[in-house]
Each structure stands twice: as structure tokens, then as C-alpha cells.
Amino acid sequence: MKVYDEKKINQCYFIAKEVYSEYGVDTEKVINKMKNIPVSIHCWQGDDVTGFEGHTGLSGGGILATGNYPGRARNGEELRRDIDKAMSLIPGSHRVNLHAIYAETNGKKVERDQLTAEYFKNWIDWAKSNGIGLDFNPTFFSHKMADKGYTLSSADEKTRNFWIEHGKRCREIGEEMGKQLGSACVNNIWIPDGTKDIPASRLNSRKILKDSLDKIFEIKHESKYILDSIECKLFGIGSESYVVGSHEFYMGYAMKNDVMLCLDAGHFHPTETVSDKISSIFTFQDKLLLHVSRPVRWDSDHVVLFNDETIAILQEAKRCDALGNINFALDFFDASINRITAWVTGTRAFLKALMFAMLEPTELIMKAESEGNFGNRLALMEEFKTLPFAAVWNRYCQENSVPVGTAWLDDIDKYEREVLFKRI
Image (cartoon, rainbow, N blue to C red; front, top):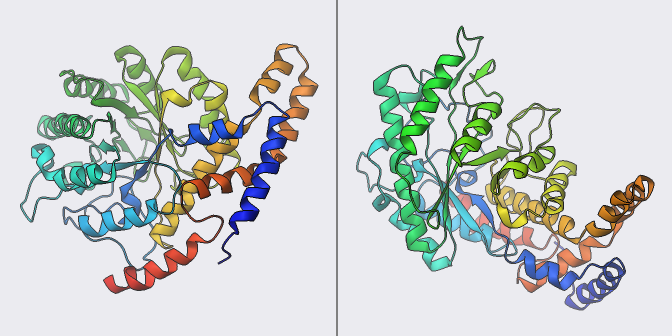
């Protein structure tokens, strides 16, 4: 693939810098700010949300990675190696997001309600050596205790207590990660609970879920080590008609209990937009977790693209002056293409959208609006779409010592031949 000439990158950048300066935008400041906004890269893209428990034939709980591209990571060592490769091709310093199913127990059978931080020691040590933070998620799916479709909202006390304990253990693990790494761990709860067809009672299971969450959050952990969040969903595989943890339920719970709300770009009706919801959240709270994925007609978790909705999400975050109050994370899993290509493409697309939003001359748009000149507002929004953003992005990649343009694809091809294909 084409390797970009450093001299040409600089020439294009200095022209772009002048253009942006005419609109009051300092590209150097934007580049420096970009370096301090991490995105949490999800580990489960590398192994198709399989984990290390060795379970087979169990319900995915609405989680399904499609495809069988060769080279899936089969253990922690391979997965960390693949993440290292992906991160070497992504500009900036970022975080890694884990699920509880990525515990490494050295062959010992450890149930999820018995997990401790010791089973994530390899991950913590690896994160320390890379100077990055970790985020965490309890895993309420792909387990025999989830096969009936209900976990924290189950009417069965034994089932419910198992998952409540799992939730508590995961908060303890997240807190320990935050302590050891010196960076607060976002611990996010998502459950697949719901029914394929219309339930007779929606209220009962939601009351049970509220009680279960109350029990999980009984113990207060220090926010400098752990940030709790809860994630809503519209529907999923096997829960097409009813999901207990709806947007309204979790928004109400988050506001009442001062827990961070998580908005996933794929968890809403196809005609809803997450970008429109951000300002509503920040009217009442000062924190938010965003899971960025790409739905194709539904929550299909396609690889993130530099598309209209991703750009709109980041523009809204900037226009709300909320970039410093949002925890950004990715959530997609595609097994039909090279998994590292998916990671790098999706993360770079997110970062492009972030930079595009940060380079926007927002003050000029806001000024036109405050003056009631909506014609100018519209014209400026359109004009700013074609500012020379790509030249600034290339400079950012160059400054971070990662390949510019498509040059990184050669690295993937080599890694595929020398590492991934040898796993078959």
C-alpha cells in the first residue's frame, strides 16, 4: 500500500492549519487535546466474544459474532498480542475493555460468582507494562444460569442471587484494576433479560431488576478507582418483544441513584439517534458512557465507520462541551474479516470523527444561532464539512508514529501470514 511522504504530509498540514486558523481554530491545540482523549478498545473483537471459560452450546444471550475468518485468538497471550498489534497502528494512548469471561484461571474451574482480581493479574500486569487503563464488564450471558432468558430480573431466587454476587464481584475486580493502574475503571452492567414474545407482566421483572441493582450497588466504592454504569437496550435475539433493561428503566435508575448511564449506538430503534440524546443526559447528569458501534437496521455491531451518525455523536459531545465528561468505548465484533483490521478500521474511524468534531469552528455556528441567523447557521455547517480535515488527521498519525493513510494494511498482511494463519 502507498506510504505517504513525510514532506508532503507536512506541506498539506501547514496549508490546512492556515485554512482552519481563518475560522479561529488552532489545529495544534486540537492535536494536543486529541492525545488526552482515550477510547476504550474492546477485547472481544479479537475472539468473537468467546472468552476463556470453554463453554459450548450455551445461549449467547443476544450476542452473536458472524463469520469464521481464520486466526481467532484462543487464549490471553494470543489476544493480548493481537491487541498490541492493533494498538500499534492506532494513534493516541487508549484503554482496553474486558468482560468477565476473559478471566485466566490456569485450567481451574471458577464460577462467575467466585471471580476475583487474581484471575485478571495477567491483564493488569500487561496494562501496567503498556501504561494504559482497563475497563470491565460483568458477563451476564453465555452461561447455563442465563439460558432461561433472565439473570438479575429472574423470579428464581437462586438464579438471581448467583448473578447479584457476580455483579458484586465484578465491581470489586474493577476497583482493584483502578487502584493498581492509577486510572478509574469503568464497570458497565448490561444484561440480556427479556422475552421473544409479549410478556403478561413487564412490571414484576423490572421491580426485581431494580432490587437486584440496589443490592449490587449497596457497597460504595471510591470513584477515583471505579465508575459504575448501566446500559440499556431496545431488543435483541430472543428478546424481540420485551427487554427488561429498557432505556426508560435505566435512565430513571441512573438519575435517581447517581449511576452513570451507558448509551450504545446500536441499542435503539433504527430511527432514533444517540447524538440527539446526549444533551438530554447532560441536562441532568455530568457523566456518560458511550458505546460506539454501527447498527445495520438493528444492533448488529458492525465495525464503526466515519459516517454521519458517528460524526454527529462526536459533534454533539463537543457542542455540549462534554468531551471531558464522556467515557468513550467501542463495541463491535465481526468475525467475517481479519479481526485486527476490524479493530484498527473501527478505532481509527472513531478517532477521525472525534478530530473532525474538534476541528469544527463551533463558535461561529453558535454565534449565528444566538443571533437568530439560521440561514448562516445552515450555510456554515455545510461549508465546514469540506474543510481540509484529512491533512490534520495525517499529521496526527505522523506525530504518533503510526502509519498514515492505508500504509498500515501492509502490517496487517504480514501479521496475518506470520501469526494468525499459523493458528489454524
